[in-house]
Amino acid sequence: MSDPVASDHRFGAYANAFSSVDEFQLHDTNDVFQLRDDLGPTAYADAAISWIAAGASIVGGCCEIGPAHIRVLASQLGEKGHKAVCAIAKD
Image (cartoon, rainbow, N blue to C red):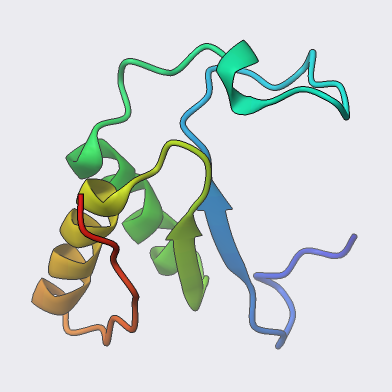
């Protein structure tokens, strides 16, 4: 895969809150994974902002990245002058 930052293609990123998925098997469910204890909403938003600084135009979250994470991310994006388009479920 070519470097998306070096190209003129749009790219995005989203992460989960698991410490590792190395042992993932197709039939596994989320309850077999260990959660990270260092990825609260502010830490996740900081990481996502760094993806944007690297050129990502679409960011979000996956497994165990919840509404609180996205709220903080949307707030930080607004503070930095970015437009956040999101759907946030109620906790």
